[in-house]
Amino acid sequence: MESVRYKRVLLKLSGEILAGDEGFGIAPPVIGRVARQIQEMTELGVEIGVVIGGGNIFRGIAASHLGMDRATGDYMGMLATVINGMALQDCLEKIDVPTRVMTAINVAEVAEPYIRRRAIRHLEKGRVVILAGGTGNPFFTTDTAASLRAVEIGAELIMKATKVDGVYTADPMEDSTAELLKRISHREVLTRGLRVMDSTAISLCMENNLPIIVFKMGESDNLTRILIGEEIGTLVGSIPG
Image (cartoon, rainbow, N blue to C red; front, side, top):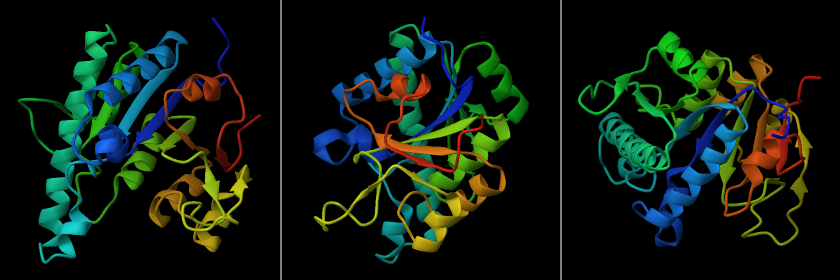
């Protein structure tokens, strides 16, 4: 077994990743690949929390622009993250990875309520903990939920999976001169307005010296490569030691 640099991490997945090329819903081949990559992480002995967005099913902020009450839309988005969490749990348990879904909103029939100490205990027992329901409050993104949960469970790193291979100076899909940034501070992300996470999430990470690695989630072994210390994607902040 290769030695790993991190004992406990928080993996942030966007809902859009689970949709694959369809752009909506859950693509079984895609979520299956995600589950297998998480399985490889557990085989390295790493404790893993996962926060998934719900944008592949519903986006509250988008609905609010069409006239829906923002709080109502955000609660619907939280439920979408629970659906994604249950789908990922099913895939993981089919390949014998013990998993718990914990939610910030009460859906006791399908998931456990999020209790910090219980989540940490699950991690210590080698279970993957999927943290759904955002923060449980409207007007906060799942990026903020990821930062909050990472700090609460004592994660050493946030691994933010995206469809691009890191943080660029501009949108690489729109600007051919955009350059990939290999390292950048939390403060620079805020002052330059870079699209890494929302400002609340970045500020929380900065205040708690929590590094973020932004990388491309695909069929490669980027997850395990990051865990063993390879420089993949963009590092926001600094790695202790």
